[in-house]
Image 1 (cartoon, rainbow over the protein chains, first blue to last red):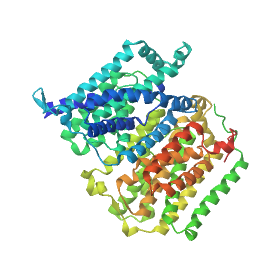
Image 2 (tube, each protein chain N blue to C red):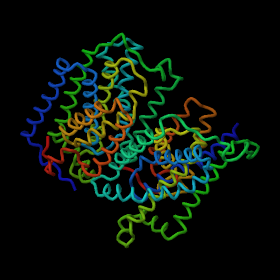
Image 3 (cartoon, rainbow over the protein chains, first blue to last red):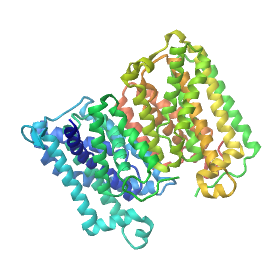
Image 4 (cartoon, rainbow over the protein chains, first blue to last red):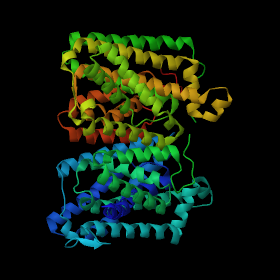
Length: 291
Length: 314
C-alpha cells in the first residue's frame, strides 16, 4: 500500500509538474498570471478526444500536432493581449482578471461546441494491460503519461539552459529592465515563452483524459489552482523546482487519498496557503514575494 | 503614476451623501412598484459585495479572489446559530458577521503576501473553507454537502429590510473612506507603502482595518442572504463566481469611488439578468469578452470616462 501510493504519487507528480510548467514559464517571464491556463489544457484534451473518436488517431500523434498548433496560437494571442496589459497601471493584478475573462470565453465556446457532459478516452489506447513497476501494477496510461511528462519537462529544460533563446529567456526572467537595456527583444522572447507555455498546457491536456479520468469544459479553473499550488511549492522560473513541486504534490495527494480519502480535496489549498505563509519563496527559490 | 486626490474637502461630502440616500431610498421603495423582489435583493447583495471589495481592493490594492469566503462564512455562521441554538435572526446575523471577521483575522497573515500571491492564496483559503464546510464527515454540524434549510425563520420582508440597512451601512463606509484622512492614508499605502510609512501612516494597522471592514460587510450580507433565501447549498454561498462578479462589477465601474461599483452592478448585473439566465453559455461568452475588452481599453472603469484623470468623481 505504501509503495503503491509512493510510486503512483511520483507518476502523478511528474504529470502535475508538466501541468504547471507552462504557467510557471509565463509567470516567470511576463509576471502575469494566465488564469486561462487550465482552459488551454482543456482544449488540448478535447482536441485529442475529437481526433480520436472521429478519426481514430492515437492521442500520442495528436500530441505532436497540438504542440505546433498551440505555439502558433500563442504568438498572436500574446501580441493581442500582453503588451497592452503591461502598459496598464497594475499588470499583475489586472492579468488575473483579463485572463479570467479569456478563460470564460474559452469555457463558453467549448460548452457551445462540445456540450457540457464528461468525455473520456479508453486508457488501453496507450498500450495493453497493466505495467509492473517495483512489484506494483499500474495502468499503462499512467506510466506512459509520466514518461511523456518527463520528456516534455526535459525538452523545456534543454530549451532554457542549452539554447541561445533559452538563455535570453532566463535573462528576461531575472531582470526584465536590464534585459531590455542590453538590447534583448523582450517582446519576442516573451511571445515565444507564451507559446511554449500554452503548448505545455496542451500536451498535459492530451494526457488529461487518462490522468484525470474524464474532461469537461468547466475543468479549467480547478486545474489552474492546482497548477498554482504546484508552482508555489516548487518555485518561480525554475523548471526543476516545478517538477519537484509536482512530485511533492502528487505523493501528498496519493497518501491523502489512501489514508484520509474524505479530506483529500482540501490538500492543494492547504498546501498552497501553508507554503506561502511559511516559506513564501517556495522550496527551491530565492525570490521575495512579500508586500 | 496615478495622481492622488488632494485633501478631502467637506464640499465633496454632499454629493456622496446625496447618492447614498438616493440609492438606499430607491431600493427601500422599489418592492412597492416592482414585483421581482428576489432580483432587487440579489442586486443589493452584489452592491454590498462590490463596495466591500472596493474597500479592500480600491483603497489598499489587495485583490481578494476568495472574497466570497467571507460571504459564505457569514451565511453559515448565521444558519448554524439558528439551527443549533435557535438564535433569533438578528442575533444570528451578529454571530454570522463575527464568524466572517474571525475568518478574516485568521487570514490576516496573507496580507504579508503581495500581488498575485495574495489573490491566489485568498482564493485557496476560500476553497479550503468550502471543502471543510461541505465535508460529509461534518454533516452533523454543518449539514455537509446537503445544504441548509431554514424555512422556520423565513421572512422575506424583514430580511429585505436588513439588506437595505446593510447597503446604507456599506455605502456609508465608502463615503467615510472617500472623505476622511484614514481613507487618504489607505490610498497612500496603496500607491507606495514605504513612503506612506515614512510620512507617519501606520501601514499594518491601515491594511488590517480595511481588510476587517470588507470582511464585515461581506459576512453581514452573507448572513442576510441565508435568511432571505433560507434554502441553499455550500456551493451557492462559496461560489467562486460571486467573488469574480464582485471584482468585475467594481472594476467595470471604477474602484476607489462611490459611484463606480454602483454603476458597475446596475449595468452588468442588469445585462446578466436579461441574457444570463436563459442562455448561460452565451452570457459567459459575452461576459468574458467584456472583461477582456474592459481591462485592455478601460482599466480604470467607466468613471474614468467622466473623470479624465482628475479623480474628483464621488
